[in-house]
Length: 193
Image 1 (tube, rainbow, N blue to C red):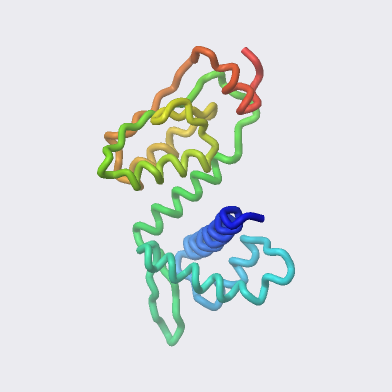
Image 2 (image 1 turned 90 degrees about the vertical axis):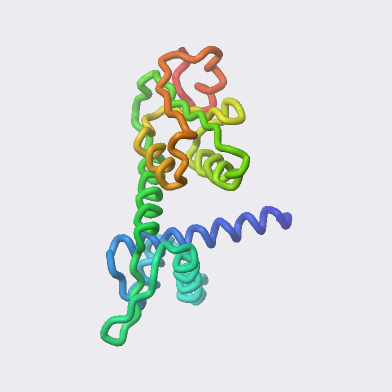
């Protein structure tokens, strides 16, 4: 395996652990630190042999959540708790929306959902993050700033716009027909028109 692939695999693993800690914390509202490791283990479904490192990885992921401002440590009755902040709650809602989008409806309604954006150069990190999230969800890039998806994703796009604070720079459209959509239909495994 090449160096880039190995680095990407490590980043994905860290992100998965961080997401699991975020989900576990949000699920409990106020979660005792001692309970994070078993809940994280259930969420991640790790392969045998990884259990010994799980507590360390969960603590590290929790630290990253605190550093990003998604969570904060609270002490009560001699125990340490992890509590989500407002930013963390928004991130949790975004993760839930991503999960909901991955469950596709049984039948396509024949409409394309398009997201077009014009994020200024001074916000290039936000633009890169927007592209990354849309690619992760399964959107297909039609042009540099135009992405397409076959299923309803309006709520997700609205949350994404609010989370990234780029509401006016992003447009959501529902298109009944799209010229030359055969490659798109093939990509999303949809019936031919």
